Image (cartoon, rainbow, N blue to C red; front, side):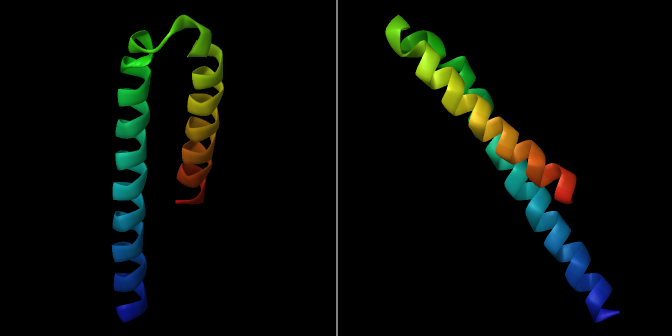
Length: 61
């Protein structure tokens, strides 16, 4: 039973971590308009990378 409890606790921590990362990404998207237009492309690639990594973590849950 302790193994199941550990897995459940680990999953909740992972879900919380993923949720926090998604909230961070949403904030970054919301603030793109505040950076110079010339930096939008680089920011898009950064956000895309972060989102891809986060979604990959979701598949592992």
